[in-house]
Length: 114
Length: 114
Image (cartoon, rainbow over all chains, first blue to last red; front, top):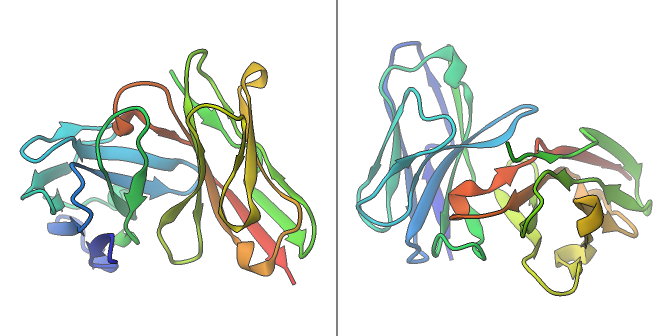
């Protein structure tokens, strides 16, 4: 049971380069999320997709774009990477968006921008 | 703004010692509460959750947490820790709206010494 799968696991970028982080879930969940995790700051929501075909900004969306390609896949794109985007990125999914919902997380992508 | 505080950033314990990690949130209404664990190099996994009912919640691997509404607290406990409990622990709470509204704490790193 794969759950939530993220690729790549590690990436080093030069400032100004672009890249796309991929995320796929096999639990038939409606909602998907992208978080970044920085030391001493917990997880902060970048973007989310409540359902296929919709995306919305989270707490820290600047410098990122997302695409909900289909129900399974939700990608995060950095158009012009900056050192401030060095972080660990987590994708998550949940069945719905109601109050009594729990999310399942991928293994993370450790991104370094030099 | 809603927030959640984890008092201890880094805790070091010997095996068989008892564990209590503090978590306080700032919201006066109905909340859902979570504890997640992140083992080294792995994704976040749900340890336990409180949605309603018995305020003493039992989770996986012998962990439990008690919701004390009057203290706005949801502390995590384990009577006897093992080396394999070495991980980072995140408290999170959810007050309204979809899962995208979940607020995460900054995390507590637990190191258990054999």
